[in-house]
Amino acid sequence: MAAVVADTHVLLWMLKGTLAERSQVAADAIDRALTAETIHVSIGSFLDLRYLVDSGRLSQQVLDETRAIVDGDSFTVVPLDLPVIDRMASVSKDEVPDPFDRIIAATALATDLPLITADERIHDSLGNQAVW
Image (cartoon, rainbow, N blue to C red; front, side, top):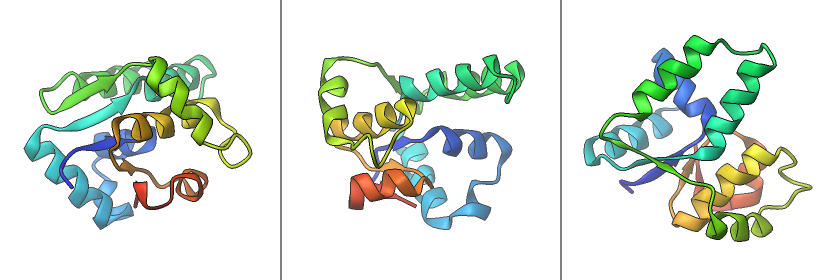
């Protein structure tokens, strides 16, 4: 596994340098993807971050810093397009009620890549395609 989709909290933990403390499996997967320059980030993560900034739960600086790391060569932002919208039907709204999380999970399905996430609801929905 080289190419992956990174969930929002994974990006934040990468920024803080605490990902390995939370999951060595996730950190190793991210390290391999960084080396291969194949980390994908759903635009849903940036919708999520924008919401957190607008609601006062996250600073604009953190959003800007996250944006700066994603602008690097190793990252690709996956747009919200019709294939992602179509795959949202495969992510149960009952299991994953947050729309941003559903977009992120659907991005992993649409790209056929593992999603690095600690979110148990997403794990329940995606099964083996979710890695932690």
